[in-house]
Image (cartoon, rainbow, N blue to C red; front, side, top):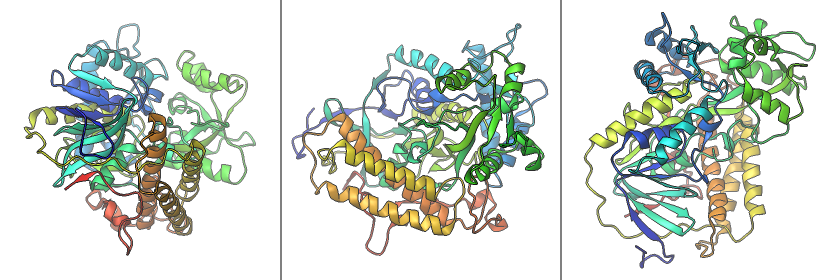
Length: 552
């Protein structure tokens, strides 16, 4: 059906459930909802998409001899620097162990020994070898490719690719669908249930291990609709991204250090034993800052892969291919490394079933904030979280009876800047990424954060003013995506900076040189910092670019 009341014609499609995102969390939810009819929207050209595809690390689960979910939960709480919700960590590790056992029994392609038992590795801050891999260091690609094949063969799931979700449609505080731009133009997807599984915000930073599509779209969608958000200041930087001129930065998986790889300074001296008792297997924030200090001082830092390659000759094909692609030989010499934005512990506040503060909206995976990561995610808990909460969201969505959306006046598409050329939008996006990386990166202070806030506010106002308040009738999918991602990066950046300014202490991945010590009063999971879009408002009201697709 085509709208006749909007100034810009668009199609209207009715769905029972909409899933936004084609990574592990989104595909898990969509598959688990079968045979219920599901529309899965992804802005990528095909399945799978998102950061899951590029995950080299494995999936943590207490399935080995003598290991227990309680031990895994204790390691999760310890790594989270005081802010992990212990009950949620217990749920994650209990459900996770059951999930992994079921997937192994189902024949999914995990690495196994000659007897068919899963091979288990160890990574930083884990007290036992409990990391399950697939394809060596290609766990994400192997797993999501297998799930994508299943999804394509599931008749109850309709996949719509190259579909950019622009805004949630709201009525009376309830989500009743979303507005997207697709190859055929604007489409209003009406649905009483929307699941956001859009991944993280890494590509909002100038240096990241995340793919280009990780621009914080789901977080921005929820923020504009008024959802509660939490822990946005906690951005995990992976310690060992390959220090080469590449966007995204190639990742050298933490499993290398688990297998014996060591970090060296420019003199060839191993330095991590002086930084932490666990040396290279210290929590990620500790390792990242130890490397970052040396890089900031102009000193090179190198990861010697040779011990790991000797221990597991066939274990790291992805890493070897990445090094070779940049003309590097890890068998001959250590590899240059530097930290890069990798994972967002914050996100849309959800409960144990993935319900958000907005009726009709669920979230799962990296876009959600369940409380399981606290201030610092434990290695290899991310894919686990996607599997566990993707399935939990699906069960809750299937069980909850919601009436269909009530009749409402059709919203007009937002004002969009596409006719001014890609170069201008790309310049705004590049400046946004640089400002966020410099002002709210691995190490922060109040002065840099306030400067970043001013710059991001000006960029948001500039982007908003360019449209002249009109919707471009000649918009193309590529143009809408460039505009939408620029808009989302700016909003996400401003939210992260606001949260980082508000937390005047250092904790986990949030390190402020002007407040270098943790504040005991802020170290309880019950004291998690939440915010909504209105917290960004100044005396004159909301800042530019914050209008949601709200229906009165």
